[in-house]
Length: 454
Image (cartoon, rainbow, N blue to C red; front, side, top):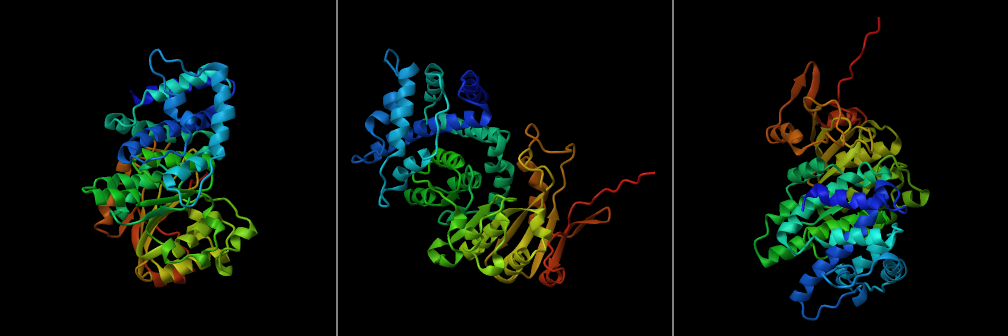
């Protein structure tokens, strides 16, 4: 089963269906089907491990009993299949009764289907899509490993699928950040706007190699935590974690900013936080009231910065992707957030990223801020990561790769100031110098070429 052919086969089928309008709906259609198939595969494992296992999904709604087709066996198709999916499957899964005592693996089914939709209007084409998905055996290590690549391809497709691109952070960036923060088994790692779960799965790829015993596997299963506001990326993130053998994916379907930051206690804190929060958005006054007066910002990303400082354990560490506007922003809230960051956290490194890293979703230039909760900031290193040779822009066909971070990784472990053609590429500034600049962190930026017009 090749990565390209799996996705293309589904694409070719759904294009013939009048109900599926564009890539975003095609991916959403594929997503809930994949969720049910993967969940059914995990249930087969749980049934073996626990003789008393009881599924939250009614017997006739399990994938194996309506979607799976064996040779010679009559399966639902055409109008009969559409009737079943629209009026029984979706209706009953949305109405599942859950209790707080239920394990996460059971609660997740209802939240996964809360806002899911069946867009397909042709029952025969829907049957064809189901048959393609049914070919994958998620309990076979070989198929599952291969499917991780397929899933990554599906997530990349989201980038060009309208507004859905905001939920996906380039794999190169998530892998680089996870590598720099070096998570360890036993630590709890969070992303409070987790999208499709990229930071969490980059973390799990590192933690997976540390598993040696049954206790390690238990720690691995409890290592990551995410919150996602929108239903579609929430469903993708949950499925992504199932694929990475997390049996109880702690991915909450909700809005991080709806809780008052003053109510957080030690049990709400994490060892590591990695994020690419939504930026450019604005929040209602009722949301802003969840923050102390001086930290009330209209910019969503600023509010997430405050949440992180409240939810980071002592000695915990953070990497967050933020737009240039945060670095040079001089409004009262931004300055107050940066002041709190410098005075209460150790902002040790800022990596200036080249433009178009998140194209085509946004052309805004971004940065990665690394800090920890060990001591107030004494000095901050800035490093400008230039566009790799041979690239004018990153794009869908020429995305950023992990190897493009190699120069930062080499510099990270042997820091020194670098000057290129009279401009600082890497330099260290003391906290006092930053304070004297009124907390303007726009340093070691990209030189602007000026054209002389004769």
